[in-house]
Image (cartoon, rainbow, N blue to C red; front, side, top):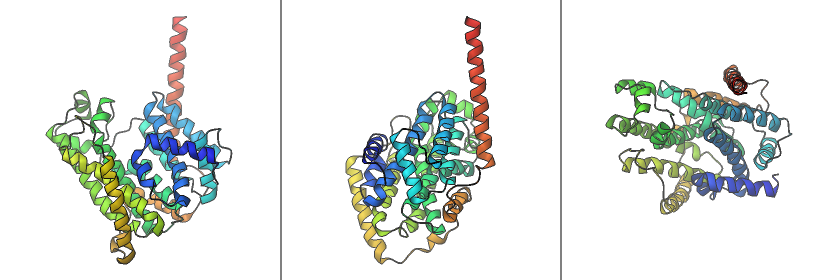
Length: 346
């Protein structure tokens, strides 16, 4: 399905860019692991292109063009794009799912901030749950209840990442903490970013994020039991490793400024073993009623897209088109300003 050379390139991209996923993927069956590596390589490289480049609008608009080519069956000449195209064709991947990721990355390029936890969940749905649902599609899972729990896991992982990176993001002028939490603490975004410190109030917000993530990690477990047996250890491993990041942050008193919360190799090995144990238990335990919990409102569109199996959506959503047009206008204005400055210098 995927050219072996392209597959090797995808593995290397993940091994260097996402050690947590790379470790968890070792417990996935080969039939899922290879397409998952291709999926993560494409998504990870897209995320890095937006995060690491100054021209973030260019990176998002380039991703839009890459996705258009993928779904036209004519990927650009790059290993991750060719591999992802093969995945889309083999698994009939609904276009609304990578489009959701595109929208989340467009929000990043727009330096969007989030007023409430619900708005932050909507962002997390796009940049993390969309990938989780695509993983479920790779396992041939289209059941709405299982997809809802996959979304829980994605949001939980993203909230963990946000809590871990509060200090690092602040130094780059980024802020993902809900603005109403800052208001409750008597702060504005500008005040915090002007002098970012691990104050008691900021550490309390990091704790709130971790606690909300933990609630969703617990909810997600009922969905893991609905996955094919061979895939359960790898997904349990991802759940435990990412939750472990939150646990390590808690051990640091939720101070994400002085050091970065990391998991050790020994911890990862321990969680991999725990994942095998939990898989064995899931074979004999009755399915938890939690699996029937309604999806978070912010992720329902992802569940609907995957369950409906509509590979090529007739059109991108109005909201996505709007933010892409905004980035187009910004890029055009920046180029015009640059031309003007160059003309003034000549």
